[in-house]
Length: 133
Image 1 (spheres, one colour):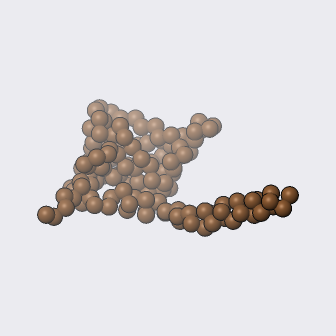
Image 2 (cartoon, one colour; image 1 turned 60 degrees about the vertical axis):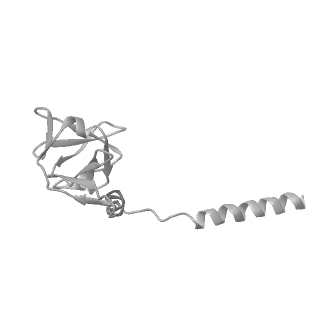
Image 3 (cartoon, helix red, strand yellow; image 1 turned 60 degrees about the horizontal axis):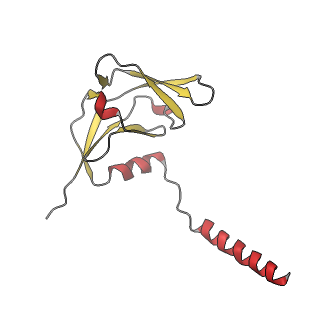
């Protein structure tokens, strides 16, 4: 019985130590900064071809990031309060591009009710900066 108590105490101490070492959660702005590390902003554009919007990440209440690899595109909506990674984004486009005039509806994943509307801003490209040799 004594060995069991010692083993349980040791396990609790190990688990408690792991919780103390956990990294602090990043704010949405910090998450975006981390995504943009080593990248340089380019000239904003009004529209993106639809093929460049296939990979997307939502930064809650801050931005939508499109693409991966050499260039990523950041869109900071005009009113990002409804931007939530738990919601589904429903976009109606008129043509083959996603533009800053397009409006996105946000829909709750569980109830499927509309939770808000987002007016897109300009798309800012961020390209990787090549290290100086």
